[in-house]
Length: 331
Ligand code: GLN
Image (cartoon, rainbow, N blue to C red; front, side, top):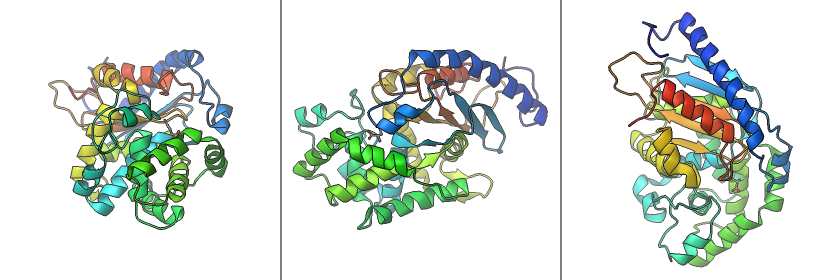
């Protein structure tokens, strides 16, 4: 389907691509019935399992939107990408990589077992809970709001507005997340934490409760695809080296213990969250033929019905289909 349009940036092309994406969203929406919304944070269980929406934003600003695109949701684990970027910008990459590794675990996002069994010298990577909680403890500031501020500043610089924290989700997670407290105590015991445990967890729960839309995720993804630079403003928002490390981490660790399959079958860096969001990054690619978004794009997906790994069930299938149709894979 990809041949035929000489210029991929015209309004006509946009409409044409939108029609395809509309068809794919209606097709993959059927798969939402095979998944379950997250319920371990009680308020997340109120999400509508049938929702599915996608936003795809190119470097030139062309945006394809389809499905349930106007539903705000909490960023959850996708925030781990932003807290790691922020900590790298505050402390430097070397400091961070001395304290958090960059290896996939092959275990669930909230696993404690591996940390203990392998007697690790540092948490495996910043995109699993143990690593992310460690990163949050390294963020500068004495209170959770101080620690959170540079994350919100970074998001504001990319999105053009300051996102809000969903207080109901924050409180629901704070009052239910026994496992994250267990991970926190383990990190405290092993000496990995660099701030007070309670402040660290409070910050972590707040960062997970930042509210976003698929358009926001697409925009952040697009800036990462462009190596950290906002193409319109021609301004570096994330240092190139940090953007590169983060994309490698997303590719190897971003979809938890399904990361290998996602890298194989979809082939682009992505990060998911339990509320059903996925932020994907399609870097520019070199191909003989004309393809949509050949200069790279960011993709935001929302589909709260999850598979047994905690990833959006319909979202993954939709991304896999689009990546195949448009040859988005980096490989
Ligand atoms: N707030 C969630 C938690 O730590 C984030 C997990 C996720 O999105 N996979 O449990």
